[in-house]
Length: 113
Image (tube, rainbow, N blue to C red):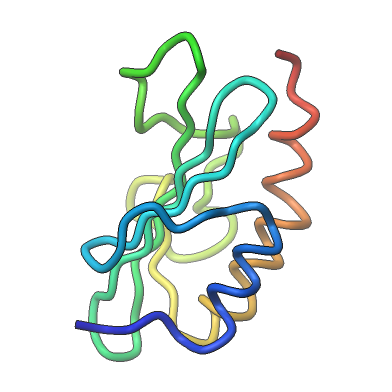
């Protein structure tokens, strides 16, 4: 089992994500104006992680996962389906929180409810 790298949990918590289930995969939830975002983080190897991002509207609890944005996550890294990213440990700690803070979360927070 891979343990989340130092600093990752602190950075994700600062963005409003809370760990709700640990290990396989680690599941983080963040409330939005009209539902929630789920961030799934799973160890692929000692130095590689798979990260998935999905949303769920308050009035449609069965609609998980679905893309959060019309823009695919493929734009941010190696992705086979547009809603998951394969990242290194360094990118998990450094680039992923920055991408969420600067690109994904502002769009979700400003979305009409």
